[in-house]
Image (tube, rainbow, N blue to C red; front, side, top):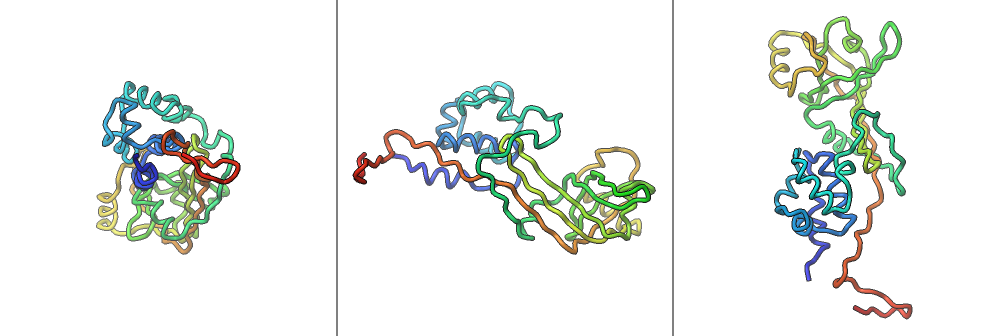
Length: 249
């Protein structure tokens, strides 16, 4: 008889590049008590491709998504997270949520190397929170903007920087906060070096030659997780207990 416990322990290995689709596939598969091999057989696919979908930034076609949703007894909308034009967090709370404080090491891992975050700064018009593309360089959160903008007002001030991720389908997510002083990057060579290290041009477009770096004085984070869903017991391998406490197969 296959050892499903070992399969699930191996399959739950976290992947730093796992997408929302991958997280939803893993969660639903484990709710059903299925291994990757069984899921692949149901979907008419290969276990290696199921692993790729779960662990990487995969973009499978509609036909495969339909088969995968049927294999997992759900819908394509549930797997892909319909309603992307709505604000995050429109769903209900999970049945058994857990609020977990993250260590500094975990926070840095979630910050990763780049992404989109929000810088909170005091401006002449009042407090402002601005989304920016950022890159982590030598431990500092670095972003570029244009002179005279609200994001540029952070220079030489203590600011807060926040990055988060919400999974509406699973009512889970995390948030990391960095507090520190923002400094404008001076020197053409330093700016060119950051241009080369940037993962992407600013999503907002336009000329944004000013780089600012936030050097963390404090870093903290929290994660909302859900209590592990017990996999459904599978026929043939489960042992039942009668009222007298005796095990029977």
